[in-house]
Length: 412
Image 1 (cartoon, one colour):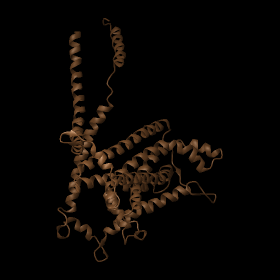
Image 2: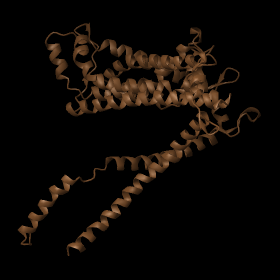
Image 3: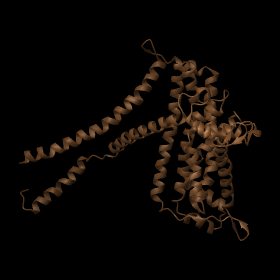
Image 4: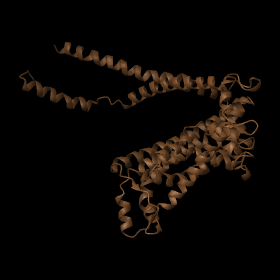
């Protein structure tokens, strides 16, 4: 009977093992075919000569002043874009997540719009704003490094607001209130009590923003012109225009190092952030936004004014300019002619397909990509979250079975 029982219990275990193996094999096969194989092929074309490994491409690529200029521009724009995004995003997180006022949900949705836009659209929006004849054309910022940085801040502002604000609304306000009761000014209470508690979220947001700034292909391509470029745009130029696969492979490795470093910092800071959320209290009630009290400005006036300026100038103006310019028709008038032309291929058949057909292709591609991501990602999450029973767990479960049998009168 014991042998039969072992056979009966081993059959379902074998079936579960096969299912788990299939669940692990599908994402591994997908990653192998669509990630590891293309990367290995690229590296092989760049670093393999006549069947032998040749790393001289690193020395050749990094001996060129152009490479160091590209790397320096990439890091510099990423640092500036990250710094300004954090400096502007932290006050916005306070106003949109710690304060309560009419229209807060609408503003939260509005500041999220730039992040969900394709980077090429962001570049076009700022190009229409800064080009000669645009609302800010008199500043002379078109095709400048400053325009790229401003566009990166526009794109990543919501990342800081949502990441920092998500933690801020869970912080227990009593510590800051105690500091204020002991005589600390609003700025000192924020600097000594609140800001240290927000450090994990700020660091996590900064690392993610740095990653997005370093890999912003469309923004740099549209706004950078021929004078500015990043590692990502340089890979595209070396591959499509110069057919220099060796240099492209070297720069791809550099890009992978930058991405890996940013993701490592983001993962570590996110872990600290999750622990902070676990230890904090539930989401505290947002306080009404009060700019004046007893005829004097409160500590909320400065962040509220800064957030309003950012929303109007940095977020609203580029989006509004893009919409307004879409309504301008040739001849200086206004109308929906441009939208009607979306169903054509343009003058002299400038496009191979209509915009609506291109949009349909984009939607189909997005639907297939989403389905694959859900299936593969779900299987990865299922396999990673599995916790197989250890020997200790099986040992702990055995006494309970024997005890149950003894109470039923079964032999030991």
